[in-house]
Image 1 (spheres, rainbow, N blue to C red):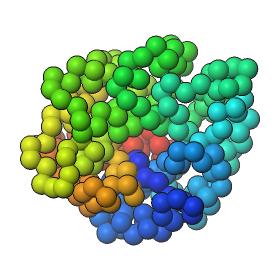
Image 2: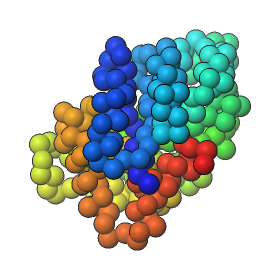
Image 3: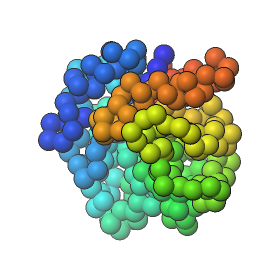
Image 4: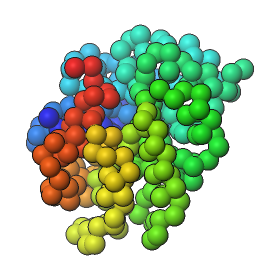
Length: 252
């Protein structure tokens, strides 16, 4: 099973979900996780997608920073499995950790936009300390990007947080970490570094569709990482491209 853990869909930004489903079908991708796009706390369309494609999609909401946990619980009750929160996010309600607290109480998965500098910062350390069993997925290979240069000191320090069992990491298409256009030659060692830190059972692939279309395209965002990791065991490859995501994002 192949699962894409980082996709966007919408009616006012990006593309309707049918566009994503087309690319999934063309590339043998079985399931996907819809990640709400930044600035949109109306998750109605995500609910509609989940209802129309039951079992094939999961989703992560966004709520207004002023939420005291009420909106988190309402969207969770409607069927949304996760929430998108920056690693340094704080609620503007009376409880700065209200949204994190509600996510923890609802058993949500946190999809966390980040940069290596934020991962190693005190704000994220506070979250891990308060919620050590809250499932947190670091987006976009920790946000390291394509401008990082050896010896990748901050990224290496960020990877040290892999010692916390509740953290996993999304591996994007390599157009996020290599200059485009293709071919990507050489490919930076960043994916291997993440694999060595987290292990295959805590690493998951996510295309970043549709922004990936302006980089290497959907098919290449899957194919190139699969070729890159082709020397791994079948079990490890299955974990990165499906099994880890299935365990974290889906109930079956």
